[in-house]
Length: 249
Image (cartoon, rainbow, N blue to C red; front, side, top):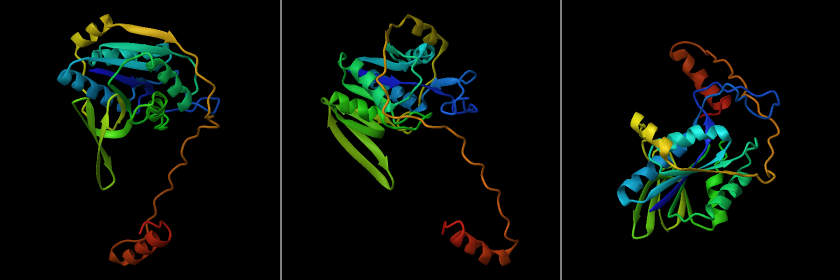
């Protein structure tokens, strides 16, 4: 079983985000970075599949030199080797990223290709689907369960009010939802062992972006709450305001 997991470096969601002076990006000089959480679910699924069916897990990362830290963590969590597509290009156009990853994967043989459902920094939710399209393989998005049998995969997707079960041939791509797995923690021994695992690094030049970021701004401040009265006498007015002003009932 040959499994590839695409992971990316994103700012820690617990960090306070500041907009950079250009007004089009975030200030990263003092930001903490982590593996995109949705790709941690995908990586854990890959390692579990390897433990059950045998084979190897390859991690592919596109990003700057500093992404090596994320790669080392992924290797410590159970990946066997990694490919680092190095680029300092600051733009995050999904089509450019997808083309660079797809061009690399055309030289790899794999059965399962895993992504997180989205990056927590830009919420684009496009790269996994684009890569699958460029590679001409099936893609099942936002999966919460994945089982393999006789060269086929059965994935479950959660939708509002129920679920969808999808069966597909392999190779195929999948994007991971947070309920897919529970990521494990790396032990000190695994962190040390990760240093001996092979990492192939290649410089890549992203194609011109199709998506341009015009500006980045903070959300408007939340309006202050309103007290309409006290006791049961205030209920009719509250209902009226919820219906006519807030329009929630």
